[in-house]
Length: 308
Image 1 (cartoon, rainbow, N blue to C red):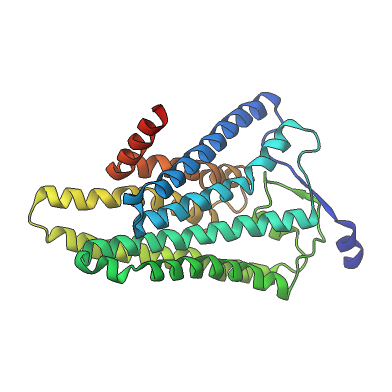
Image 2 (image 1 turned 180 degrees about the vertical axis):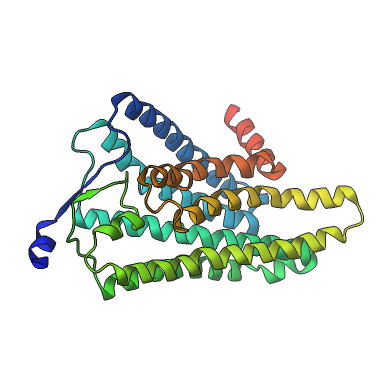
């Protein structure tokens, strides 16, 4: 019986959001606008960092990686979601397509968790060891860290799937707008193996990096409090505010998602996931640019060159 059901389910259907046409159109316009801003904002920030020599430092190197990651993170799910809103069969997705989408979004999400921790470490070194900053955070070390983050997250996702491939043996409707791991696991045969993997993966890629970020900022705050000048304290702390804002936005929604608070509420699950799939990637370039004089100066220089 299991074999029949496993072989029968070769295509899935993403239910998406409300079936009400007016609600659907409002969500479509809202999502399309935010996705467009995400693409434009992150491309502009990436180009500004690449073309401005004074931004060629470890801090902006990791920020450039974050923008690049956010571009792909949103693109892995939003276009399919938009298609599902405007076409009758746009929600259809193959077995393989669903698995690929799920793994890509999970891989990019885990990479972002760890990358945010790396950025916190970079701020810790810059503030606590300013004279040795460029020695400790050499370009060789930055490249090694980046490759390790990307490859480590990929292997963390890929190895379990290679060991035991996914097989669907339950209903073919996915009550979500993309193949989100928590929803897809409900359709998988013998999903206890994958539930253990997801739990372990969440621990290593979410809780541990978050704890590392908090520890880094405890050390940063201690160092800042030792600065005698109030202006100096404000200047140092202001460089961390942007990163802290992004951290709490991203980790807050992810931890709510995987804590089980939304486990049996598909509506909340969908809207909370919009926060880290669409909203956070859109706001990242804005948050990092508004409070950053170096980025604003670089943008002004580029605008002057364009006008000429």
